Length: 594
Image (cartoon, rainbow, N blue to C red; front, top):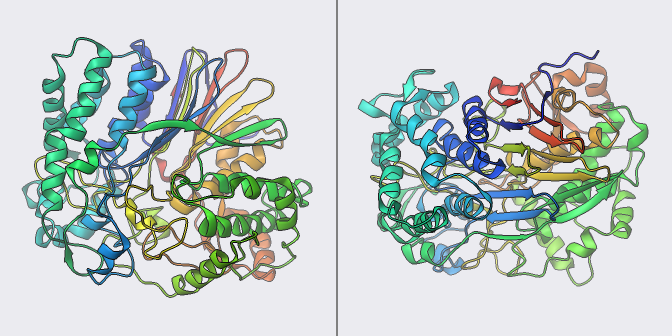
């Protein structure tokens, strides 16, 4: 029997896998109380906002992909849009050439709360107060502070004291940085949720109370608090103090919604992703390209395997950085980008050595976009950041503490949910006074250039990196998977799927496999860096493989074993068996079930 770091969790009642053991246990508790996968995912999501506030929060965003028995998969789009006043001219009038990576000008409408409320209203079983109860408990009674949470606050302590006092009040109670593993509380957020429940307790039904909660958040005291915060001038990564553009009216005029998935079929599996307002189609493009290469003949994580995957990812990400954006505001040629003919032509560009060029596709009438993408990549290779910039992705691989979070749930009724909440990081935005949570910094995805699919436009969605996956096999298996990691999310998922598509049955074995990712992509977060030929690999790939990758021209960065990726997954099989697994990396994610 092959050794794995943990067993594949198996059962028939329900399974939950998230990036924090407390959230996984809370999700399972909801299933035990008669809740379904939607109740479990939402309760876990609210708890992750408490126990991993450096990774996500109520002011953040949420994409999810889910399926119910006998129905087609759907996307929950809870990615908030840009404020009505967020024009390129407005930012340039402040002397800015890029959207700051932190502070008030980086905020779009917070979408996570409305997303959780929408799926609870439409598909959940449990009352709102039951779903929020665990989050309130951990906010009031406390939880052991993760070392990464402590380190993040310690790095910013002086900045909080000087520039963001509302953040110092919440994250440094008594003006002290929380010690690793010490009990940490967020009583201000607990009061926010308790007030929301008080203001909605007169509703006549479960669904009516959820609707009332949506109104309280987006048109009541919470929206008023956000509006008030945005009227002040606070320091951001530009090095100057700026007011925000987000208003209570922006919040009142926005709602989460459902939309169809984008999908592709491979070796009996159909993989479902978000539309091009997220980076999800990158995974489908990379798989399309790779089926026109020799990758199936290459052993997993051999030099040939890694080389081909990395080169395919470079081509797919070049298209992301050139053609993706909000399809409500730009024409995104996704039918061409996902076509087999296009993938075949792209595959011919992969040679025996690493490409150092930014090579988006040659699409009729869009050559100007490709030229501008190449110019941005060149500029990005020279970029530098500022306070609070960048997605807090894989702290040990950068100098920043943090990450995003992910949730997978499968229940006994056949519901499966994959969700990747993020944003609202404590290090990127000041706490809304009195509410206990910071806002998001997702507007930094936009470019302050006219005429691009990802140009800043009022009320448009930023092209997010958040990328949950749901896959359905022709034999009836349904699999949910995802990971934190910004631009790495679909890269690490590609490594997962390439093994799954070869027939590997053990989810944990796949998650234990060494991972790699290309840094030859235009970073989505400030300072928008670009590293030509960059390839980050875990040392467990082995010296021989690493040497061969270097010989092929890859600019290889070797990271310690067990240091890349935070994948979790869950699966439902046709016989009713449920499975789940979680990465051992960072010793935090956990799968539970029975």
